[in-house]
Length: 470
Image (tube, rainbow, N blue to C red; front, top):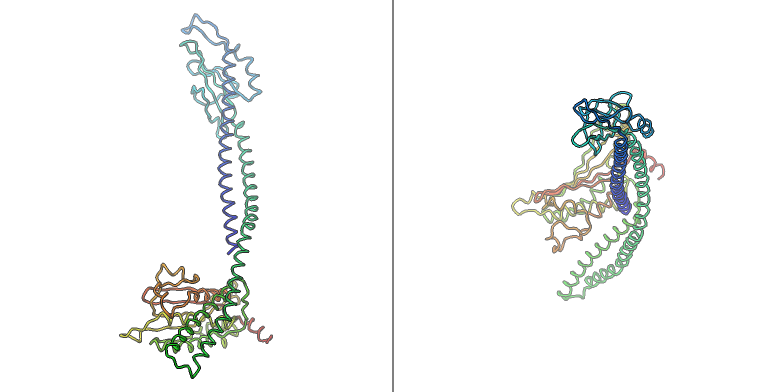
């Protein structure tokens, strides 16, 4: 429980940090990218201004335009200057015809006057950042000046930034995960200690209560056995005290058992346990109560056919034919498990006056086989015990909570003198988990309940070892 909580805390620390780092890295990337683009655009605009001031303008009297640009005189000195900065110049006539360029090959890019900067494709994998300026005197357009800058000057540092941010985020997230695991362990330590103290207190309190309860019950029984005790009223009161003391004693025993299970103090006494014999004893113990209530209580044994037990070349479950229903477990705990299940089924099954034979509790013990991944020798033998009753059933909304401690599905049972403490199924689940099994409940309101317990059968090699040791 604490380990799972610690894992969830560490996971939440890591997830929140990863989201914050991702948002920070994205914002930082967009800021740096926009800053680099602005710097390139500023550089291009500055080059446009410098080149525009150096243009040689000559008056023309013969053509329709009063002025023209002397291209050779204007761009002869600028070509070498801009080449060092990876900047290329192009000059176009007023009609859009390319007159001069620093490119070795003319660009197949349409002329779009745009002084704010735009990104265009020079080729499939080559991008340019361009600024185009219309040069004019008054209303007379002298031409167009286009300045280009390679886009890799922006993408190269951007790519390196992405790599750095990715590595930094990964390293930071891993560090936060480790630190979160450490901090969650530190945070869980006082809670674990408090929980351990609470469990120890429950175990100690339950243990200390057993002796006075036993003494009260003994004294009541002695008083009731006194032949000179003739008062009917006092005898009735003592019987009530005895009954309540017995209930309190069962509650204390259940609390003590669960407290010891939680603290790991309960160590099963492992031994071969024949479930068929154990269930026969449980049925015999509950038979009188079932008969008094008009309930049919029965036990059915279902074995795997012999041809399915033994394979052609290798036996699936050797040496299990004689002890087909044997498990490795603790007899007392398993007896307590199935006594709880059968007694609950009998308690909540009510025989009707019209059809007394319809009320029944059926216990079925069946062999199951589950093939393993490595063939017949790795196949696993299972034993399934089902307790079916025709009782009042449990609603779907209550099924997820029936294994909770002190939970009773029917609120009306709280005032029933025969009602339990709500710990029976919690104890049953703890015992099943101690024996590496599974417990499931299926129920329909007013139709009955089926509780299924699946336990691993005793393997032949384990049984042989135990036989040799004994």
